[in-house]
Length: 230
Image 1 (cartoon, rainbow, N blue to C red):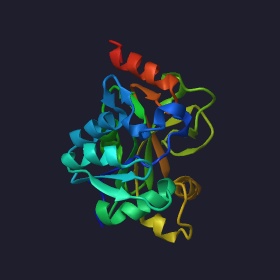
Image 2: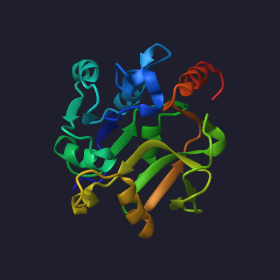
Image 3: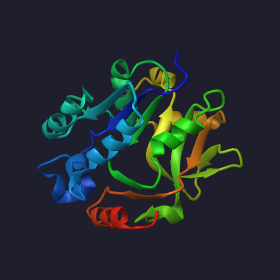
Image 4: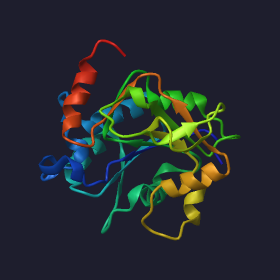
């Protein structure tokens, strides 16, 4: 089995309910930030590392996403009749992604600084890790309310709670997906199992990051893009 990831999964199937009226006629990844759809920002980062394959899962209002992604040679995993969540969606896409670990990337965030996929690629150690999450210190997570998601020890192993925010980019081994009976499930299920084995890791992102999961995040993300500093 391949040890290093050479495929990227773009998560683009969600309903975008926190965006309210902005997603009544379009999927959330098509909402524009600084004149470009959110998913175009994510796709540019994915293409920069030159993976063998890029796959996107689609469900809600998929046609405009298909029109944007297919000319870019992105493979489509259409979830129908129901949406499968991150774990179920990733498992359905495995025939397109291939064997071995894969990158996954949320498509509703803006990164300011180094390419998070490249940083994860450089830090990946499959002998120690079953997943490596790119996390943002709480003080660098623009617009984040509430606490973080994870805390890391001196070696980078993580557990729940702490001041690290998962930024939506990771490398993950996919073999555990086949052990889940449910059709619809979150990757949190695998993370909990990996954490219990001491094989869930994080790397801290050195730049800044903005979640664009709600309308207010659009302006925050555009300000972040326009800012001179990292």
